[in-house]
Amino acid sequence: MVTTRSQKTGRVFIYAVVIVLVAAYLTPVYFGFINSLREQISIPVTSPFQQDQIYWENYYSALMRVPFFRFLGHSLTISGISVSLAIVMNFLFGFAFARLNAPLKNFWFMVLISLMMIPETATLIPQYVLFSQFRLTNSFLIWVLLGLAGSPFYTFLYRQFIQGIPNDMMEAARIDGATIPQIMLYIFVPLCKPVIAIVFMYEFILSWGDVMKPFMFLSSKLWPLACTLMGTYFSLPQRPEQVLQPLQLAASFVFIIPSFIVYLIGQKYIKEGMITSGLKA
Image (spheres, rainbow, N blue to C red):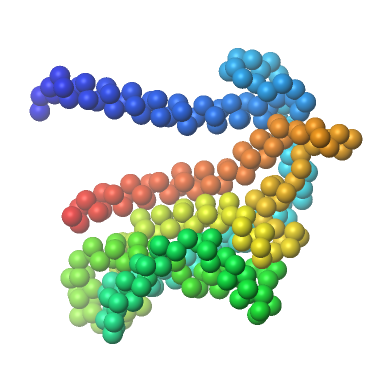
């Protein structure tokens, strides 16, 4: 195929826009990183070539301000519960809506869709009142109950993806004597890897950085890392008004590392899902 001049011009324009957007996103990250490596009490770095000395010990100092590994365990516990239940429960709900027959199934699916319009923050106060009445506050059991209830958005994702899978595979498995659990486990779970990856990444990022629910439901001793770092005042003991910005930035960069790693691992399955969706279409 011959590439016309207008097509070349269009590609150059697209690449130029992408470069500008990437620069706009990465520039604050870059300056935040180099400022995390400057001296604790110093003038902020505003030029890429302004910094003469690097202070890697800022990261160690930032983490030693709190019992880092204890609060890291709390974050991993909350994220582990949230992610595992989000993957399993919403898959079951989505499979039921997509493949199983039940009275008023379409009506309940419309109810589910309507729940997506309710902001999550609008349900925090009712949740707090309910859990307080059952004396469940200050416990990670709250995240188990919330996970068992599922998410309208994740259920919708599973349902739409499973509906795009040909029904012939399920019928052939039934003829061979497979039960519904076997069909779900050996046929639909492998095919749903792209959706599982999306749910895993999205729920991990939400639960890892969530501060509203832990602040409401947990005491400071059970806070996850996000709440702990937010509640830690990085300043000098003898001069509380002197905020140590390099330590704040260092703690922020350490905190986002797990989310970045999860995205790098899961992007492969997102691309795979795009290709699979195109083949099904």
